[in-house]
Length: 488
Ligand code: MN
Ligand code: MN
Image (cartoon, rainbow, N blue to C red):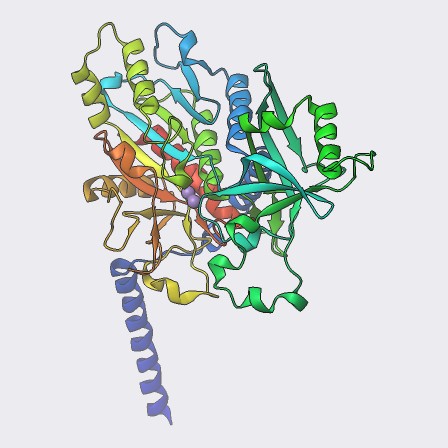
């Protein structure tokens, strides 16, 4: 008995020692991306929840790219930022911004080091999938007044029916005066909606393939039903709405030709989950990165390298146009701040500045969704709750269309984050050959700067109600701040 016990004790001691060794070895050799709620203290949790309140408030107010820019400009000006055009020269500590046709925005905090030594940029996009209106949108059919739409960006069209929609945008009257429209956000506003077929009569519809479950030409928005009170005239229902629009906004049917009006999901951003750990809202792709980038920039007062937030338009449809990332407008901004910060500038100075610049292409990525596990490689996907995801490459089918960050740069970013104790994870967007995505990264990389994709993992991306984790949003803000402040 005695002996056995002693032997048992000895084994136990050996086992504990071995277990300790194994644990040490595992910690030294294996990579782990812990859930951040386990890692943070109560103070960080409070900070994350409080940051989410400001973020939700911003999202609820900024339902389109134009409004996002307007609200951001207000914020920037309240913090001492001035339009770049108002500054003849620039020096360290100056805060400037430029609105790109009211749909995109660039803001910079000038650093103490010469601009030739490069900038630290965080670039995100403020446009989001939505429904735009056709030039002749309004028509009447069967006593209903409806509007024809053309969807913008990659959507599952069926997700946009039978939900409350709001309408935001700008209309230019014949005389060139603008009229803004914003309907459907406050509690006593009416909303608009796209009708869907009842299941009782949906036999044929339900046998369509999902992309055609609702077709593009079936995304018709119900906007009215009161007839103009003259029984002898044709088109009375449409005339009733035209009259209402004229009385309320002074617009005629032709003015819709010169309109940029968007249909978006109505209502504010919400907490999701019984524990309120998630945020649910329309257009978190990519306003979550736009908001955190701007919050990071405006939290800084002095930097060594000039810090810049670039918030692009048109990412969802290929970054084209003069507000998209392919526009020279962004390059021009960089050239202008260089020219205004030194006596003489030539092309070589500019190229040096760009070559010495670092950029985070800040865009959301897909969070692993256990309901749809087969589309992802679970060992190489981002997870909600594990922080900002650093994505070396995006693209699809053999990395097509990605800038594929240089490991020298990726390693530098990771060392900075580790040093500043910014948690991060990594992943790629779905399985090889499953699909993929594009970002603005490659367009800025074409200029010559180092660019890395990174951002917040999202569930239900491109749907009317996208989901993020509060801790990821908060830590992404911290990551962008550390990058703008401390990247060499
Ligand atoms: Mn995006
Ligand atoms: Mn997107």
